[in-house]
Length: 91
Image: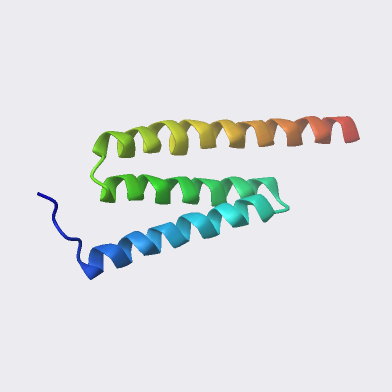
């Protein structure tokens, strides 16, 4: 039997949906790549919280470990590597 969600649960879910969509839009509109990665990681954390609110704990854990952890670190490493190459070529 399905249980009814409360207004508080719906409000929390809606808040995290708004955070996820807002930061995803900021990530695509950001001119600075590092700010874009920060916005993207916030959007991915909000998506992980949505998975947790939906009761899928395994997806929550995978989202945090794989996407928020590994992919964000890979993006930051790539940005830092590109900035280093640009600075070396300018000298």
